[in-house]
View 1 (tube, rainbow over the protein chains, first blue to last red):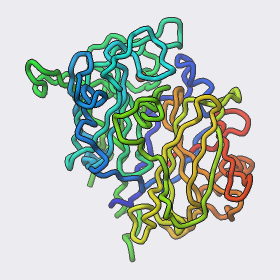
View 2 (view 1 turned 135 degrees about the vertical axis):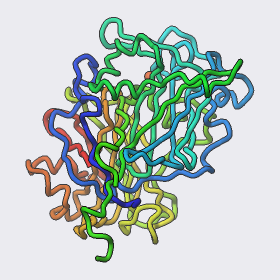
View 3 (view 1 turned 90 degrees about the vertical axis):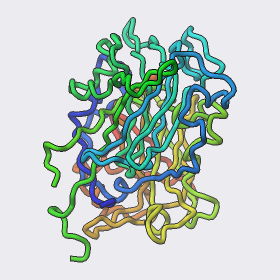
View 4 (view 1 turned 180 degrees about the horizontal axis):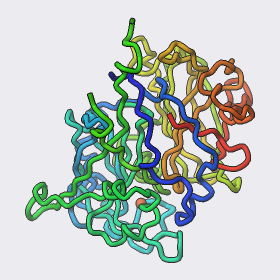
Length: 241
Length: 199
Ligand SMILES: [Fe+3]
């Protein structure tokens, strides 16, 4: 099953490439159609990463920059969920990486010149491997909203950037997670590069009090779906026949 | 059997934004000490078999300006055409690399080994190539493309053969600039627009 072709990507579920409301996309979007073909081994295989890669604090953004010595400033949250494929199967042992602004909405990056101060104890990146059932979790602080140069007064809603590998290079996905109830979601041109309402709603993590810890952190649940593999029995001859 | 109605919908992509380096190559971004080193620093170890290649290039937007905030990932077979994890694959080839456009010039460099030919399921052979995935601010869904090589026989490659406008094939072919050295520029739109893939 692992080398079966990938299901074609349903492009209508993804953002449009060219969107005048997101100005940078205007000069960075291909004008010509993509070349479509059935996936090949180059897309059906992909890098795998082992547990030896992951350090004990890698998925704890509150502590991983200070190496456990001093916590980052901000509202403590747990982000958790599962990585599945389109057929509903969990994607185990796959690398999930996140990055985000600090509680004031500032990134630790030379190109981020927003007034909000850096937090000396917040780096802004984390990573983990999913378990056998595709589950992952991070402990972090709620990122602040921040302004960005687009239209005159555009603000990004609170968000966490996610990068997920899957088991095939053709499953590679980068996306963003938003927070239930944030009024800036509706006003964000980047969110609305996705035209499908249901797809936008699935980028919004819901508050999950059940999985919160009293006097410690709130929990937000965010499940991620990667491309699946086709069942080949009906389309291709089984090997050796 | 799973029917179309049972399928989940793939999570929508969102742009990687200008600070993708913080999450994917934090040391490069100046966020040091969280991880021992950045992931995917090289696709090969010193003992990898095959011809060493250095591929340089840049990514240009529709105005001809090079992107300075892009991150790229590459994935390839070893010199014998086997992917990491396949039986008999060269343990010296990890196959995966992450690299970034230079913050000042937009130039990127990939040092690797020349990949071998890889067969399709139906037995047709693909010309040697390296798969690329490009993300940046303004790119809403990561762009897939491939690097082929000028000095290989690319005539029967199944993917290149599907490109109707034959001059566009050249956008996927790295040009030899010296011994083991190639140039591969990517144009996101406009004249000479690179062929991007959906597979
Ligand atoms: Fe951001």
